[in-house]
Image (tube, rainbow, N blue to C red; front, side, top):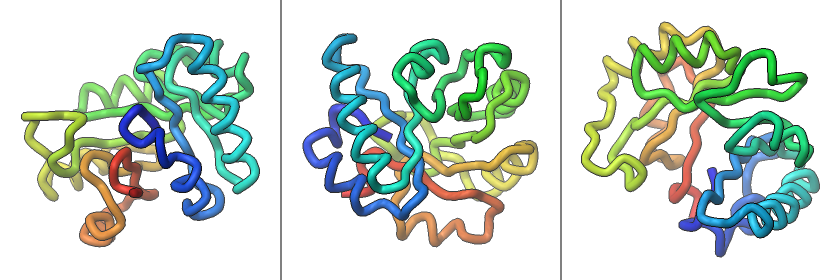
Length: 168
């Protein structure tokens, strides 16, 4: 997942990802024109290394920018039109909403303490197992994740992990 925190070394991080990884481009800190320019530069590197790139935002914008997918809580299933869709979730209500919206991938968080959810308690192993059980789509763990922490959760039925700071 991209944002201002990892922008300075983003290209190097993308080159080190396993082939076929997904990148969720956020960069909310940029205005529209610089955001699109940065997206296009990240997209070119992602394609070179065989990765998918999702745009956080509206499906119409993701399609206009030729993203592989869209990352959003609020997209309408009918607007997908061939885009893959990922959705962030934190509880059962959000899991149900993501499933109704046609999400293809569910990002479940926070697994551990994270700067993205300051003060919010992380999910314990029992909560994670319970919530994952209700997801009928691939689940990606998010929130304070890194390679070592993911190994700790290897017994859970997940598709992988995502990070903002954890790939540096």
